[in-house]
Amino acid sequence: MDKKKIKDYQIFSVIVTFILGTLLHFTYELSGESSIIASFSAVNESVWEHLKLLFFPMLLATIIGYFYIGKNVPNFLCSKTIGIIASILFTVIFFYTYSGILGKNIAIIDISSFFIATILGEYVAYRLMNSTFKCNHKIAIIVLILIGICFITFTYSVPKIGIFKDPITGQYGIIKSKN
Image (cartoon, rainbow, N blue to C red; front, side, top):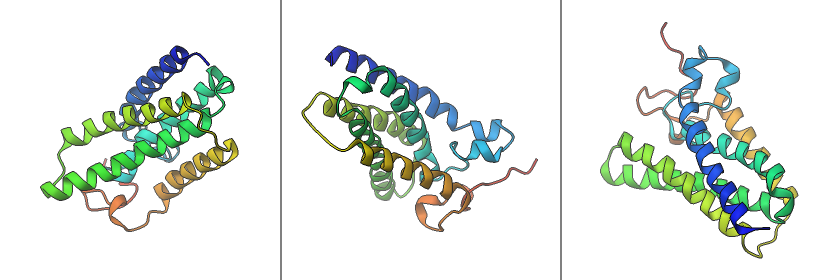
């Protein structure tokens, strides 16, 4: 596969994630708190809910990319899956490291980390697509499905641990506005 075509697709993937991830931060509230929209949008300010802003747009870009270049790149699905996981891990590790050091989180750093995580994950995927890396696509698909199931399930059945806790309200899961 032509490296330029892969690079162009990866740039497209970054742009899609930037735009859709930003929009997904607001779609739950804008939808009138739709329970369907809650499945893939941030329903509170927890770290977990913000990971949806990476995962679902990157997943959509992966699905689109599969039909655009994926059939011609032998390790496409595995590369994209590893890129998504790298984005998620970077976000979690970076957030808890910097907020642990500072004793608080800062919105502009959180927002910047979303963009950095997106670029990092797509760069990892790009590098893997242009390598001799081989893997089982069935495993990549299963991993993506399991991650998606976790995001949806934990929207409605929320474990009471820190990553799921909204730092503003101290609550977990869907927080209904008082309209």
